[in-house]
Image (spheres, rainbow, N blue to C red):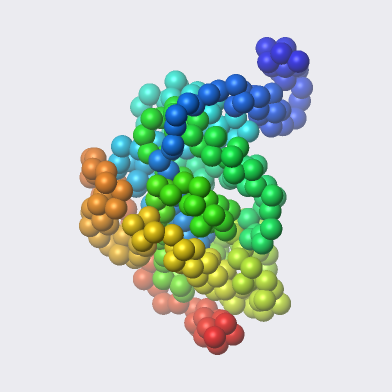
Length: 309
């Protein structure tokens, strides 16, 4: 079926039209050639609710980089088409510096591009896998194609990819990684709120789950989320140890919100990019939550530390 004929059929079909549009546009990627491209990618990593969203917004706004916006993210099976469409339609990029548990509102706001990463890393969810069949050549071709559209370093907030961080880095050794870590108690308690928001109960797992956390499925909710944060950060740090030291940077979330300008300067040196106008971001960033942690969370932290040695 030709694309124009497929679109005519699409208009007549009720249901998930965006999914059908992605299926129709999937072949576009194979026809697009990004020759002699070795994409410069910057991946923001960390546990869910650790500050990855606000850090992505900061980099997207304060540096001359490309990023996945909410429009482009709608085309997870045809990201190059989405990038071209975004560049065509969004001429004035505004970033809100706000989010609802990671979900941003404006069409030009950054998006974590979960559908794309699930599609290209062969994941159904965000649980860590020890074995998965990944077509690295296809993924790299897609990333190179996206880079060729923006023609500048690309910022991505990723989850599933950090399960394979060192392996990906060996294929693209110029890649930069930024890990942001938050106070363990605050991060864990925010994850409990995310569970309520997403599932209506604190009893259900949400977001990225490291293999370490499988040991604590039968434990308290507090112990589960503590193991989740600890396991993710530990895994990423172990992956960092396998790649060159100048390829990664670790940021502290509390310091970031307390001293945003200093943190942006640190990132600037790391990436070799100048900080653009940052006043709007700096004036809008909120102070870190200083509430006392729940005793159950503190108890869970001690339990997890003893359990993993």
